[in-house]
Image (cartoon, rainbow, N blue to C red):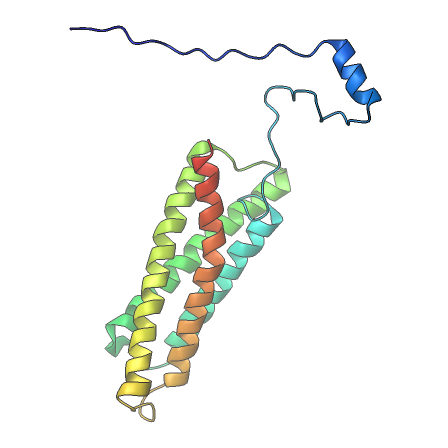
Length: 193
């Protein structure tokens, strides 16, 4: 049995008469208050969104702290013996590459004054941020667990580079904290479409 499905068609509100617009201005309301905005006008991008100076700052902070975690961990000679530390190095490399590539995209968008609110671009940014954020947080948590095991439970910090391991883990957590606002703003932008 085929039942008909009702169709809903949006109806636009008619523009206010010129007398209403003049009356709104006489009452002290600005141009944007009380008057419908023309079609196609977008809101400003929220701070921290892709293509904004704050978004560029977040991307550079992510890349900096991921590179710092990578450099500190790679400066030790015994990190490959622990899989969690090797995982941290791999996640930091991925985070650094992702953040730097999106920083270049942000720089380009700022130079040519383009908005990055394209649905496909926001979807790619959201998925990439989610993947790299999950990997970075997982690697930082695993490294923190191993660092606590080495330092507090086994008490073998004299033989290992505990300070370097702790510093690299802290840098990975800070990189994730810089990534979280980007991921949340991208997801919010994608969900609000």
